[in-house]
Length: 144
Ligand SMILES: [Zn+2]
Image (spheres, helix red, strand yellow):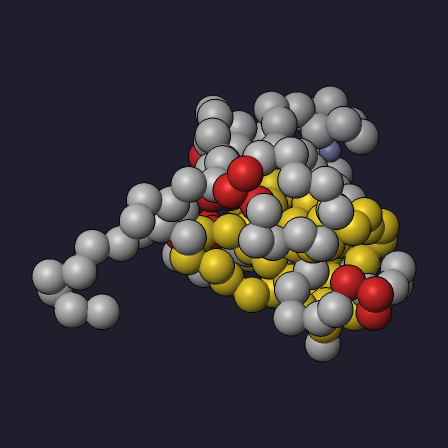
């Protein structure tokens, strides 16, 4: 692209970070997958939230996670709910359990670079960063 060309604005819905999820999205922008871990019991806390769902402690830290996981569940989207997704259907929306988190960190994302017919529950996947705007990076996954 030359300097005189302009990119169309990104039209798909973007994350709306809040007090709990902003650190996750900031880490994604730096191409780091992070989740909260309870300071009291060590359990990973997902989705991000104030208190630990296991021991109800408030303390926690944001720790870097492995970039590998497994497909826990998925659906294949064929219906165009928003016109901006018309060129994408059919596409896969999956729940990905991140390795090393005792399956407590489960991201909702896309499995890409594979025909939807070949996606399987239990499939090993690796994270791929998708810089959709200068401010927003989405974690997506492809088969290992
Ligand atoms: Zn805890």
